[in-house]
Amino acid sequence: MKQESKIPYKIYLEESEMPTSWYNMRADMKNKPAPLLNPGTLKPMTFEELTGVFCDDLVRQELDDTTAYIEIPEEIRNFYKMYRPSPLVRAYCLEEKLQTPAKIYYKFEGNNTSGSHKLNSAIAQAYYAKKQGLKGVTTETGAGQWGTALAMACAYLGLDCKVYMVKVSYEQKPFRREVMRTYGASVVPSPSMDTEVGRKILAEHPGTTGSLGCAISEAVEVATTNEGYRYVLGSVLNQVLLHQSVIGLESKIAMDKYGIKPDIIIGCAGGGSNLGGLISPFMGEKLRGENDYRIIAVEPASCPSFTRGKFAYDFCDTGMICPLAKMYTLGSGFIPSPNHAGGLRFHGMSSILSQLYHDGLMEATSVEQTSVFEAAEQFARVEGILPAPESAHAIRVAIDEALKCKETGEEKTILFGLTGTGYFDLVAYEKFHNGEMSDYIPTDADLQKGFDGIPKFPGNEF
Image (cartoon, rainbow, N blue to C red; front, side, top):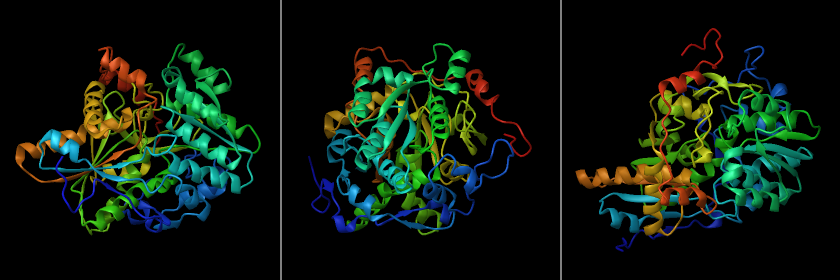
């Protein structure tokens, strides 16, 4: 392995170099993301309306389109120090294997028990719930990383945690479920018979494997019908992308120390938390006209919100009880195939990222499941980390871009987000190795069923 003397294999920051504030991309966006709408009145959701579902301080962050930097409370910074700063890694071994002139870096977020970046927002949301004097929180989880992270944060702060886990992931990933229970969370496969909306979904779709939209509906119902509880979400919302900005801020500080400027920044995209966090300071420079970067969102071909979705107001949940968000969506009734990238099976995308994509400030591409696992295996064999299936979407495109550099001779610098580890995803790896994994791409007719459910009202044409 050849290593440039100037650039270490792993770049770690000192604690004193860690960010003390989150960065809010919306402050620098010329076209702000559209506001959440009350589905009954079609008026922007007010602070009072949103605080019936979310914690007060989190609603303030959700609605803040003007404050560029929001201070991270000391208690959260101290918690971050248990696993942050996370390393920025130069993928020398992968570069050598590919024989590419490209320089490849990845920001590794798997150095905590949840095995993913989700803890960055989980501890923040739990902190504000505790500060407000709540008993506990409810949430959904797909692959389980978010549920695990929230269970950890709630255990640390002494809060009750109720998790509705997408049924296909609940069955595929029993050990992820057991980690949540170890941290004291109750975990229910969704859709369930525990809630009114769950019973309705099961009646309409008997035998369904569930979706994040279903699980969100159940978690919101439980939060709003039990005193002392609020709902928290692991992706999509503005507040979550704000908390996840620590990923990109640390990446940029580390790169600036060594005079590194990425040409291409790549992240997997399900709801947008990891991608939004990774690109935040770089997109800020792009929005302010200070620098330019090529930014690529990578999503599964089986759930192609960006690449085949519609930019419109839609429900964030299948039960249609949440506010309307303007986003790239496949329709809240779209139930994706039971692929093995559970964290990327949401029907819509962050309003912030949707607006940036709509304005041409970033690109999107979709990749098929078997090619994703081929990339995951290749990466594991040379870099020594077993990646989560979600992360492997970014790895797939990073490898493809590095191979393009090999063809052209260009020495581009690539940064991608390695959001977490895949040690709880071994059922998926087993199916891949046994040749039992298939690729599913929804037809236009499949997608149209979801589009037909997008609310129709003046100004929401698509």
